[in-house]
Image (cartoon, rainbow, N blue to C red):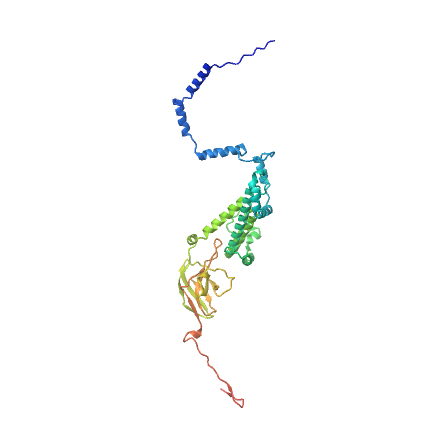
Length: 408
């Protein structure tokens, strides 16, 4: 049996020239078809942002990064491996431990590990980091998050930022925490549960198809208790943020809280939201010592249920806005009484000249502080200082003579 194989075709120079001419004729740059195609391509030319988005999406679909270095003999880290490693991240105590280790050993890591980081396999560092630089960044970010959460919690509880004196900060936190605890205990005693809930009358009404409009709220608390309850809930939220400081949502939450608090505490927002009160008239101008007095107070934006207190006229203006009653001093708010129907009842027990201070009713949304008005004063006098009111008592002189007789 004989097999015959055809010889390969021999291309002559003539055939090659014909192919070149054919290709040149097909790709003639001056032809109308090529010019129209180029114009269409220019119209469809994407922007550089679209090109970058397409490039990044293509890399995500490929599942690997060309710039990622893999050590010799090491397996390539796939997207699934990254997700598995990210799921193994530890919790609160592990992050605190590695944050402390990273901050303490930062100089050694920068000097000994960062220059040779390409010799380390990816994701061999703790906290899900793939390089010593990212580990140090994560440690610094964790430390900053903890400091911000603690500072904002201190500011919320004590209404001021912490100082460098740690003992003073701890004492102030204990003082405010004890006051908040006492307020919560007082509110717990004033908590009232509706009789309809206790007797399950509401369940019977629902079964019978009756109306629920006549029922009261299940639990009622006094209005002044809303502030302490809200403060306690905010502190509990801060504890939750502190226990999850390593997560992204906790950082977003604390950033949002600081932004909202800063916005609401600005003077412009406070003026628009709550107009500032003003006292325009005060009668009478003087009072008697240890005698009940009804003072007529006229002004703008004075709400019923507010509080009117008094301080000596010589107090510094820096003490006017102090709403704390647990600080003992000469400029402490004294003789405070509720404001209603344009009057306030007061009994002065000290001889001095006092100026009025007003505070809005309790509001859980924003704290209220006293505002004092030194343009109006009440002078407290005694009867000895007013001519015509002081009556000198009759005196009887008793003398004993030598023979023990009484001489008047």
